Image (tube, rainbow, N blue to C red; front, side, top):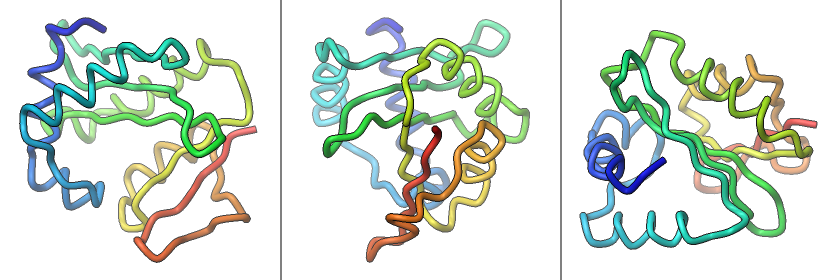
Length: 140
């Protein structure tokens, strides 16, 4: 991942359809760049750009959050329905072997829940859902 990928990630996260699906609001450019600069400076973080046919399709990251190790990903909508997220997450999980890993996902984001399940995640019994409509999934 390089800083040259960030403008593409910025455009991806501005997609209103993706925002509704992820239940995550877009950031303005300054907030987005500040957020990613923090991610890229975090020595504990692992960040990868997802490429498809030489195009930046999205990203996959691992980071520490609230005392647990989490993974997250964002794939541009033009790449949905092609298995990109599943392949990217599987490859990432071969590289990042620490367990357990967690992933937070919007309850209504059936496609993302399915990607996580295909990669071995299951809904955490400790937090099946919360007041914001998110579920916590666990691998390992």
